[in-house]
Length: 341
Image (tube, rainbow, N blue to C red; front, side):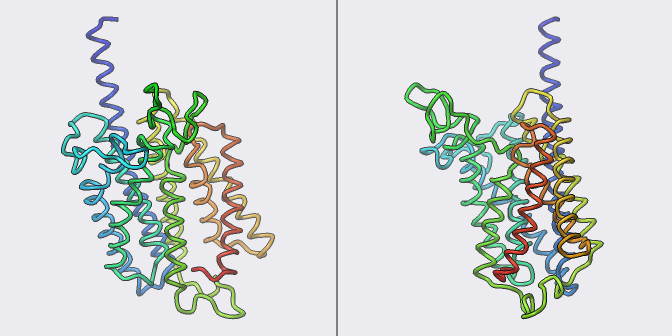
């Protein structure tokens, strides 16, 4: 093949990859919308409007904070494997147009918005007012989340993609420092997004306390829940659809092989596994099928396979979804027993 033709084909492939990554990143906003709809479906009707306003302002603040500060701490040269230190990354000042940095910024910005959705809006529903919610979002976007991203996806101490260099100049994760060290593979944010958001949500809800009337002696917590099951259903479907694009984005950014089909299959199989587990447990233990529990089982399957969706086989993904469903159902009962809302 002619050298010029081959070069043009490679350039076209790079541009197409950039376009696909941008479209995948845009689907994270669809995921934010899905979570907002789920939240609207589990709160009292009088609090739906305020929740939607918080969602819009929170997403807006996330974008600005990640552009100005967060991205610089997440990527670039590492300071001891802990945090990024390149000043030129603040506000993308030295990130050249057409480079992978632009695609990476857009995708990680969306991932940050999703993480903030988990704890700043969903977990604190009907309790935290606007200003504290935005303050939590600012701290997470500028300080907490960038450090976790740098550890895992940047050049931090856990990263599998060019981590801290050893004495010979070879880049590898510093927790091992040997040639056998592979680092942490968190393809689509199982730990960076979902685990981090979940831990912040848990700590926040313990501090804030439950909603009034959430736990009543002798009454199961789900019997005093308000909500619109239709909104929950539609919101979960939006999240499910958006997951395909969200999980494919980092695969395209970090891999030269065609893994798209494998990722899509693993996502679907894992979600089905989570749904199956929660449906069976709910049916046998509660003698009925609660649509909220079933929907959360699907969500548990989607979250459980986020980290390894590109590196496991479908039956692995199915087992992952089954396990995620068990953990969700058990965690639901444990939180109710501990009266954590």
